[in-house]
Every structure is written in structure tokens, then in C-alpha cells.
Amino acid sequence: MPLLARMVATPLVIDVRRGATKDLPEILADQRISARGRVAIAYGSSCDDVVEGLRERLPVADCFRVDAATVDGAMELAEAIKRSSYDAVVGIGGGRVLDTTKYAAARLGLPMVAVATNLAHDGIASPVSILDQAGHRGSYGVPPPIGVVIDLDQVRRGPVRFVRAGLGDAVSNLSAIADWELSRDVTGEPIDGLAVALARTAAEAVLNRQDDVASDEFLVALAEALVLSGIAMAVSGTSRSCSGACHEISHAIDALFPDKAASHGEQVGLGAAFAYHLRQDHERTDQIITFLRRHGLPVRPADIGLELDEFAAAVDFAPQTRPGRFTILEHLDLTPEQVREQVHGYVAALDR
Ligand SMILES: [Zn+2]
Image (cartoon, rainbow, N blue to C red; front, side, top):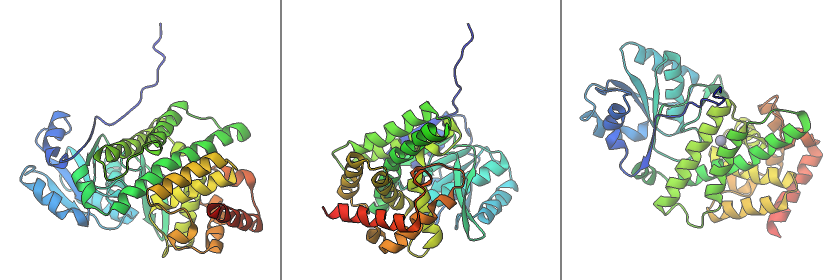
């Protein structure tokens, strides 16, 4: 009988706990990623001391400081790494550093290990690298990391806002999946049930918890939700299960109001709440808003420094940020005046 199954490439190791970073040499050796620790370490400016602590334990590793998350910066990193021979590239830092490292490793055909120091986004284990190029932010497909290390001690050291932002990104999966299902029903777009199961389970896991970022168990649940979201994207080869109208609105805010842009997770959480308002799914809208409020995340445009008209302009522009992606925004195809009415209606409902 033929074995009819899908082979799914996933990371060799996923290690989420306090103090995980200091065990990086053992993780690399045990997983046969690098027996001697001959790796290139790319790190962000806030990780100087982490890297300092690793130098002694990884004496044959070379370290490269990464600054802006740009295509040029990633190419420069790849050029620098190319001058020597390494078993793998390790990225240590937040989303910008991981995205730059993923892209550089992909250019070189080297495996990449992600050591995430915050939980602000679902790019930790994803096959996507978000980089700026000539004043424009683009998403680039890359191989997903083969190792994911999340050190809760590092996460705790960063601003709590960065942890909360990840909650917005995780819960926005629900809105993204609603968009994907809408597109299946309206346009016949194929949907990937495994990606949907992973991404939806991840979002529901954090949505239904009663504790908050003060608890380590909550951080583990959030970290796992973000990792599963990345794997959902990897198994389906599309970001569809984690990115819909919520993300189009966020990309539009970045494009139109770069000076005001809040963090990605904060924006997509608000975008998801507004998208549910557009779907007239009152139960989900209330559930998402209650969740966002409980964790101190933005629910109003004013919470991220935007006037209602500015937010409406972003919603109006949003479909142009992901041409070809069908969401509730493309489905309703609202006029600018209708968008304004919906934005005012959303904010008025918050006060009720
Ligand atoms: Zn996202």
C-alpha cells in the first residue's frame, strides 16, 4: 500500500525555557548542527552581553553585529559570512535580526538557528523574512530555521510591550483564517487544513488563558503559539493562515504613517478587531477586544496615535499592500466614504 502522507519540514529543535541561550553549544552539538561550534553568530545591538557570555563557550564561532533590517544589510552580512566556512548561521535578537539572518543564511545555503530574545511577532520559526528595500518593506520567502531557541530570561529582560505585541500577532491568526475561508467560499482559493489547524490552535491557546504575561506558563504558551504560527506558514508555503486584512491594514499604516507606526503585533491586533467588525461577527469582535484590553493592547486608532481619518485612510489603502490576497476588505470593496462610516461605527461600538 502506498504511504500517502505529506512530509513536513520542521525545526530539529524547539527549546523554550529560562536560561536556554547558555546551552546553545550543547543544542548545536546534540542536534548535529555543529559539533565543534563553528558557526557565524549574527546579533543585534541589545544582545552584546548575551554574545559576550557565549564567546567562551563557543570559541571557534565568529560574531557579526546586525543593525537595520534591510536587504542591503542582509547581503552585507552574507558577504561577510561567506569569507569563511561555517556549519550554520545563528541569529540572536528580535525580529529584525532574525529576518536579516534568515535572508543571509538563505543566500548562502546554510542552515539557520533562531535564538529569539522577544516574543513580539510570529517570524521566529517562519519561512518569511521582512526587510526594507529602497524605502519599501517587503516579505521574502526563505527556508525556515532548523533550530528555535527562546530564552524566557531574555524575554523578561525586554520591555513588556514586546511580549504583549506577540499576543496581537498570535490572535490575528483567527482573522487571517476567516479571510482565507472567505476566499475559499467566494473565489475557490484552495485552503490548507493543516496550516489552519496549527494557526487556529495557536491563537485559541493564548486567547482562552486566564493568566497573563506575568506568568512563565503564559510566556511558554505564547512562545509556542508563535512557533506553531511560523510552522503553519512553512507547511502551506504561504502566510495565509497568519496574515489577512489585519496585516494589510498594518502594512498600510507602516506605508502611510511611518513616523506613527506602532509595533507590528499591536497594529495587527487592532486590525483583527476591526476586520471582525467589518464581518459583523459581534461575538468574535467582543472576544478579541476584551482580550486586547485585558493585555493592555491597542483597541482604538488613537491608542496607536492615529486620528480616525488616518486609520480610515490606512484601511482604504490596505488592499494595495498585498495585491492578489482576498480578504474581507477586497470582498466588501468599500468606497472611502463607507470605510469612514465603518471606522466611526467601530469606535462608537467600543464606547457602548
Ligand atoms: Zn504578523
